[in-house]
Figure (cartoon, chains in turn red, blue):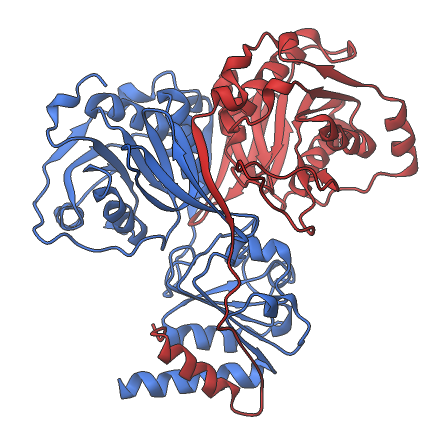
Length: 271
Length: 335
């Protein structure tokens, strides 16, 4: 089976992250990485192709350093990588990103692989549960809408048999098991698996694998529909959280519990 | 905006109301309260609705209640609900749709925005009208270390609002809203979700404590509880709060996975957060740092949580928590 995994390059979570004056994520500080949550998506795809046969293509959208995200996917074991890169994409909201990714998946579906892979159409699209820098978590749903495919998101367990994908997911108040015929769009949570670390062989193979670069023109997308031009929301202001001046830190002297109770009472927080 | 004139009173705001045991959830009343500042409020319910529930929605400002039947389990999946709401947007001419910010609701909000050309904001902590009538929202980013204010530039807006973002308040002069029943079956035809089948759907028993995502007070246990959540639960009960856990605590099997607070679990923004034996790792912070007041109890003075706690206690949670719970009960008894 052919699986496409959508991955995102995000600023390192552990690093100090910030916004630029015009409200965009500041990507100038470098040290970006493949979103940890997307590693679960790559892992899920690799496990499926290892048991059922087939190959995995990783796709990303973003500026030049986003290539690191698909490189990581190749190191983990993906066979092909596509990087959609175009200056007009800058400033895209999730709708612009979904439009571009959907077009890339359609092209992969028609062409049978970035490097002319052997098999036919795309059977499964897998994403992570969210992008750690934005937590929109709506991308898979938008992809399914664009591609007119069934969606089964937030999989804590994912299996494929007889052309049907089966997903178990735990929502706030309910546990569900969903089934959808392939092709379909699924997202996996961090409960789905434990992502592998790239081994030496994977790292060497990834070095030799070219990353296919596509522009908006390659995908037949009008630049006016993405980027700043296509965005339906606008950031007015980005402000860092102020440091609170009245913070209290005490070491327990035998009465800290009582002082905590008194603090809650003073602040009207006794419930 | 085809048929907007049917409902007088300016911009119509649709609010998706979720119920538990036939009663609107607390988050729904918050949505109605927020929606009143945006326009004329219409509530939307899937499934059955009782007279009491309708009256309650009226008390919080709904002037109409749209009820859409759920003929199959598949009909409550996000693609189907998005199609229902798109139909109602068309019928009412609504400019704005509000939903509670949960994972399924964020998905349906996105599909609805795609279908109606609306701008989308999820995980909003505030929503109001700007000077030019545009919908203006506030969001937290990067583990709540930044606050973003933004506006929807499209003619329509779909906003997913976080629980506890606004304090629910009834209107001074409530009306009993008319109930408008809609035929769902037509709306579900042709929705891609129809190809998805719900094989099992098991509601999890909801605890006697408040819902974690909606609670005003949450007490969270981390690695430091070392398998014993009883002091955490007891303090939560003293405060009438919910119990949460870190990823370590759920992975160790000390408490069920649904209680995990963090970027990949439940995102909470209660009035009071108390972390016991919680180090404050970045993944956890992403799910709780928007809390109004943050209290930390940890025996490790170097734990990162002390860098952003409003009230920090370096000490043994197994002595501090019971003493605090007893103190709280005493203070409450004194009134």
